[in-house]
Amino acid sequence: MDPDALLAGLDEQQAEAARALLGPVSILAGAGTGKTRTITHRIAYGVASGVYPPNRVMALTFTSRAAAELRARLRPLGADRVAARTFHAAALSQLNYFWPQVAGGDAPRILEAKARLIADAATAVRARVDTAILRDVAAEIEWRKVSNLSLEEYESAAHARRSMPGSMSVDQMLELQRTYERMKDEQRRIDFEDVLLATAGMIETEPSVALQVREQYRFFVVDEYQDVSPLQEHLLRLWLGDRDDLCVVGDASQTIYSFAGARSEYLLDFARRHPEATVVSLEQNYRSTTAVLDVANRLMRGRPGALTLHAAAPDAGEPPTIDEYADDRAEANGVADRVAALVAEGVQPHDIAILFRVNAQSPELEQSLADRGVSYQVRGGKRFFDQPDVARAVLELRAASVSVTGEPLFKSVSDVLRSRGWSQEPPAAAGAVRERWDLLNALMRLAEEMPEGTTFRAFTDELMLRQSMQHEPTVRAVTLATLHSAKGLEWPHVFIVGAAEGLLPISHAGGLEAIDEERRLFYVGITRARMRLHLSWARQGTRRSADRSPSRFLAELGTRTADAGWASSPSRASRPDAPGGRSRPGGVTPPGRGAPT
Image (tube, rainbow, N blue to C red; front, side, top):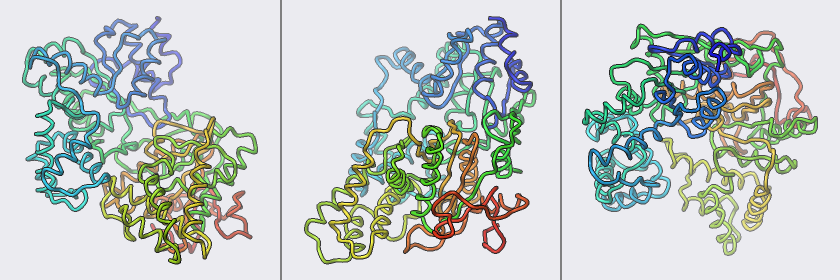
């Protein structure tokens, strides 16, 4: 293929990045700036110009879907022999190949799931754990390993700044982890993170392995570099050796996996660590309107590594709206009304997304859409009533409703949910225990919202009806998704709900770093919108819950928007005769509303 033809369709910055083939290269690619196109055309240009032998190029990313997309795009560009893999896939291939040479025999088998072995280890050390705590222990083990910490180093870090799952002490957690590792070795198993650790260990300790690996791959490209963990960075450096033919691509403003070990400082400090590096910024946005990008730019202005996005299309677009509602139900109804109106106008359902911070926000939205006959799908997870914790709780509520009579609904439901782990106050820490509480609390809120005098049996009948309504098959449907699962996707119409303190930022986000992560998560949601962006928040969760404030991020946007004023909203909840909600354009907080600054 003609090398120059590969550059013909790129803009000036994309072409500059594609021509930078040798030495360290950092491509700072903002949302919607054609990052994947730039990566693939750069690789193909290197192959077509004879600089890259295709079998010596490794393109690395973080998900199998992203790796498959890279391969699919490289194929028609004449670079089908380039390896595009996840870190784990590349490491596993090397581990299986070199293990017989280094240790003899086949490599250990990979644990499909840690839970059973962790449960056995917990029993051995007499630690009381349930399903949610098991998930949190597994996450803690994963965090230690991707942070590239030995148990001794982890002990220091845990004492300094980490809270333990459940009520476990640091010493108990250490004992559990040591027992887990011992049991795993006895069974000749390795877990997912061990794949990277073992591969790195072989390269470090076996010169012949290091030589063969480095002879095989010379040129490396790492996508989503802001999400790289210390362990992945360590393995990458071992693959490189003393060479510097590395191209990293990322956006510090989209770092949203710090809780899982991601370190954006590797991207932010790349130019300092490589003074000779070529640095190219992609800021021409081909996805969103100027109105959407203005909001996104304001949110991230002055933050480390923030890029200023410019719309490629001349159309300014309609300004984003912010709706205020009385409570979560009014918000769900108002958003569902807007969605139903768009569909009635001819917008395809699959061109609409509703994004939220946590899964427990979905049941009200699911019900409101179902009430209006709007098909939907829940991306990156199960529908609310399909969540295991919810399904088990509903079964127990149904069973209890047969015999319990005469007690107030709140007491009957809360007694059952307490046995499943619910309490009136949420757990302080994040993780699976908090996720379970959120889901059970959503059931509790449904009970609180039932009309006065509703019996326990009538409430469970309502739950069963909602469950059956939400099991209908969906085709070309509205997308419901958490902000995390929406990353990498886009829709013409995007609704972000729950933009209130306690939800966005989430209540357990403690410290400046955690709040900054919440800001970036909000930014990721905003930059999913191509044409229209609708933001909303509710003053209360339920009738019994405490008052909320609008998210500090909304207030921040409001201080930067001129010519503010209330606007009418097509939402039913926003009409004067239904005081559930009000609407305003452009993220403006009106005078006297008391929004935090």
